[in-house]
Length: 74
Ligand SMILES: [Zn+2]
Image (cartoon, rainbow, N blue to C red; front, side):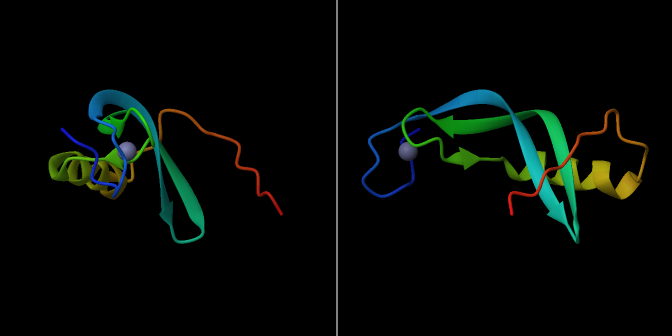
């Protein structure tokens, strides 16, 4: 599929990414998320069912598999 960013000649390809979501003051990190990523500008598309799955994971409020350190730039 052609990239949706104007003027970008890239194509989306299936990749597995690390996706971060802001939840209030917190950052939630998801690993192994299937996404379409542009091979030129790295624009990222998540399928609606993928987003629903991430929301379900957060709503379950299960203990995360891992914890990540978070650094604030400034
Ligand atoms: Zn692109």
